[in-house]
Length: 156
Image 1 (spheres, rainbow, N blue to C red):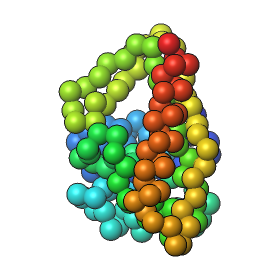
Image 2: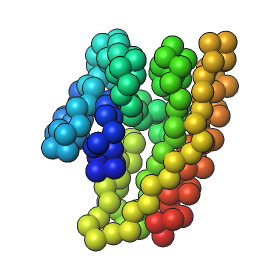
Image 3: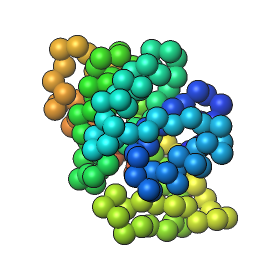
Image 4: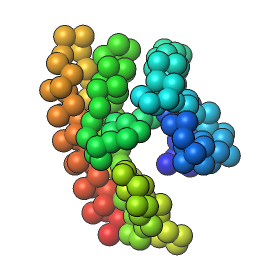
């Protein structure tokens, strides 16, 4: 993901955890300046930074299931951000033929070297000012499930 997005002014949201520090350092090595924070650590500051980044033309990347899960369940933060800024949510996922899967709650996946990797993007989702966030969360989950299946199938 960092290779694909290193030249398009992307700002991923990365937690302030120890695991997040590793991911942030990888981002920095590709010239990507992440925003650090999560709902459990520095959330308010992170939301303000994300809004500022979007308002200044950056793309932002978020994991919609938050820092603690549940796994693959959409939290409302990403929808709130899209609603307040008017930014589209573009679901994306990667799949790999061979992976290492960590035993963490999020089943963090690292592709193995010399591998086939596929990335899939879905249709943009917009959140209007009067939209019900819970309904949009269900729609986003469906879109994410679709792109995840597509990326996994393409990588096999």
